[in-house]
Length: 255
Image 1 (tube, rainbow, N blue to C red):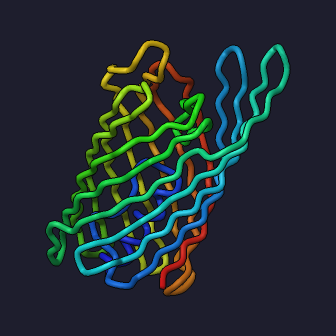
Image 2 (image 1 turned 90 degrees about the horizontal axis):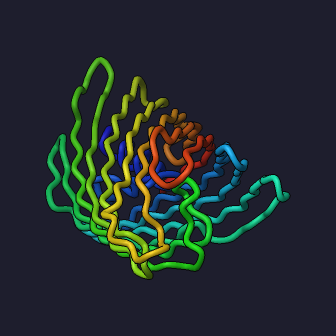
């Protein structure tokens, strides 16, 4: 079914982007696992910043209406400045989520999701890592629907989230739009626009930034259980952080 393949694809994109899941919950007892390697590069005027990330994302269908998920992202960064080269490593983000299916029809679905997030010294969002580990809570609404059934399958999702950041960083509103085109059962193209908007309520000296980025990826479904994804991401506009670009490759499996 297009809906099941769509669910797996969008869920895996969460390993390398803020969009964290699909409005279509995984079936009861269903498991999805995504492992992704990312290379990120940013070249602001005073320094150069590169980072290699390893991301793991897991989904588990609990019932027909409930789904749990978890994600861990670990990175190694190198910053080159006039004063020398500096290397850092650690957890970008670790996240646990619970999702409730609100509505599911033949061609559309709606869900609500709550997540607990631990952000680290490194970050998947440009160079916005916290100097010390920080806890966050996010509430997200997701809606998706099939747009065209033939001659190619086209679907779209929209998401909006509020993220409460403890420890002094500014709270955020996040919005994501994804369009998927499935020309055949073996291939899928995903196009995504993402935004992070600060509420600018940070304590003095803490993180406050805006970020707008786009992402494109191609998925090859090798078999019913295994898929390979490659893609890239570009940060088009930012405030208070330097933009960058990224490339990624991943392996998805479902059971």
